[in-house]
Amino acid sequence: MAKQQVAPRTDSPEIHPSAVVAEGAKIGARTRVGAFCQIDGDVEIGDDCVLHSHVVVTGRTRIAAQTEIYPFAVIGHAPQDLKYAGEPSELFIGARCRIREHVTMNPGTRGGGMVTSVGDDCLIMAGAHVAHDCRVGNHVILVNHATLGGHVHIGDHAIIGGLSAVHQFVRIGAHAMIGGMSGVESDVIPFGTVMGERAHLAGLNLVGLKRRGFARDSIHELQKAYRLLFGDEGTFQERVADVDGEFGGSDLVREVLAFIRSNSDRAICQPKAVRAG
Image 1 (cartoon, one colour):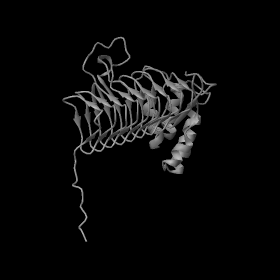
Image 2 (cartoon, one colour; image 1 turned 90 degrees about the horizontal axis):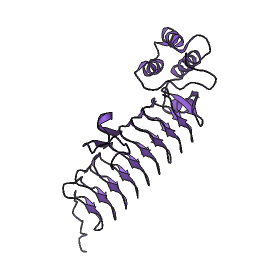
Image 3 (cartoon, helix red, strand yellow; image 1 turned 90 degrees about the vertical axis):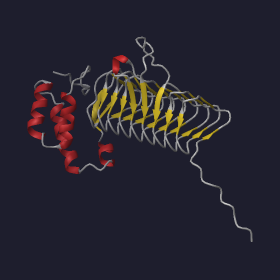
Image 4 (cartoon, helix red, strand yellow; image 1 turned 60 degrees about the vertical axis):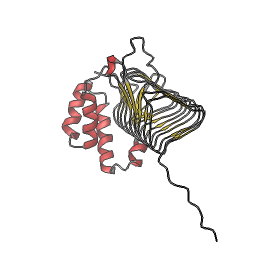
């Protein structure tokens, strides 16, 4: 009986003959580049990535290992910012991300630190846009056609609903949930849920908190702090101080308070019936 031949293992990238890969581009081991992709010379793609057909990756773009990019995504083209003057800004995309069809991501600008970054394990669904100078955390989901304006910061595990738009310089806290078709003009606290054409705070993301294994007692403390923080007595800053005094020992509450006290160009998103004091 003839001995079965075993194909030799190779760590070389697999590049379709119709793909255009410029000289200088760095393609990692075992990465697959599909038909009609275009990869320009300043691009670096990590090991075990997959680029399906018709993907464009350009500019000073760095993509970490095991990220998968679907057809017609355009990654790294010049920012859509009239102040951009060709400065050598960069785009960083983390490991194990899934970037679906027609997604666009732009590098940074001189006015925003020169870097746009997307963390690890993110799901960027079809048609979503990550603008210049955004900072997107780990495990973030952008649902279909969600749009981030320039300089937006998104915390870990946040979910940005489909057809929603986040205004420039807005911060979205960790574990927050943005409802579909929302227009977000103000900062959203960690663990918060917002919705609406001009989005308002609609409570806490209790489903997300439970799914991610936060202790029941911690969630209850956060709920009590939320009711006090967005109550109707005193000014907002007075309520912040009251929450700190009563619930400041809770890790979740401290995270919310630290977010509120951080410097920002935007107000904190409030419930519909409440205005910041």
